[in-house]
Length: 395
Ligand SMILES: *Cc1c(COP(=O)(O)O)cnc(C)c1O
Image 1 (cartoon, rainbow, N blue to C red):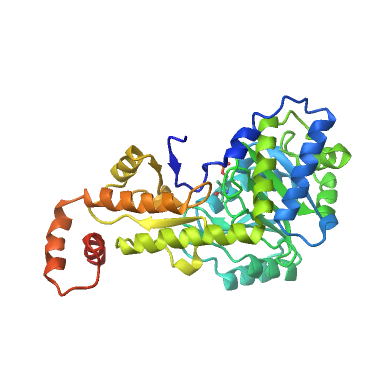
Image 2: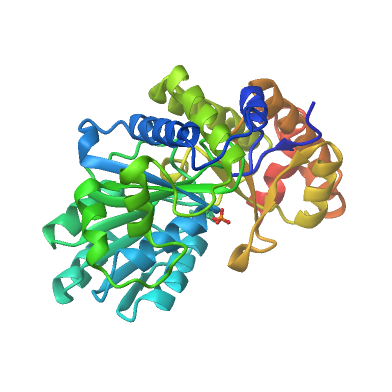
């Protein structure tokens, strides 16, 4: 039915019942039907986050992509206090950019893209500076790295700072333990691992911290988190006109996760990632970061020498497969393959076979190396897998 298989970290191929849900019903968002819909979404979000004490947490939904939720938090939570952004990639940098607009007292601890956030460095910084809010991306999507929630959460607590996390690309695929990681607020969106359409984002946070927001200076009207919370608590409403069809889609996508079981869902995505990674390793491909540091959502692959990544992407596209090229300092150096949304194991095997075929189309320099490999004693590598391995190993 679909023209494209989206091997991206979002948007994703949605489930058939999510596609149907958005065309379900014409309702007025100021009538009780919408109150019920939003209340249902809030309830399901808290279920998905597996919070033990539901009264301790609340959720609001914003019409706008993940950045809207991030900007709502960064403009509404910090007030005149001091905020520290931890960054090791593009999305950390984006948080810094947003915070600087709204908060004069924005500090940045920057680690190279693809490297871990050094917890000791963060601790040293927190000892030397009085920081009120610590902000970090959970899954840094530009590299695929999962950042240390528990460690930074514990440090934030020890230094009496609120811990805020961008979970846009991890929620729905990885455990986010709000309680044990001391997370005050986290953001995510509808269109990544949760598996619905793009256009909605949400903030899950401690009810007590939501309550305090009304005392903060108002820095934006549309994205003021205090207003979203006030409307949510008064009558499960949103301050302005919501994208109602998308709310139906999100509600259905959350139902799908809960019906499958949250941990079953996470395990399924992890199994798919392993299938994909094993297959790409067999093709001789190398990954940007160690597998143990990777989120289960996507894999960042080093572009082999002799391969033009733009052409690779277009060739895959001709076979209905969509991947991402690297951005920023990773331009032409990596490509990214996601494994979320409605992708079956069969789709993944189709992807691997197509990738193999397309990679073999990138010839000249590789040709010579094939000769070398064929002459070498049998390495156990099967037919096509030997083609790219030596080319990469030679760099
Ligand atoms: C996708 C993403 C966002 C939000 O980007 P939008 O373009 O607003 O959807 C924010 N943070 C991370 C880590 C993401 O992966």
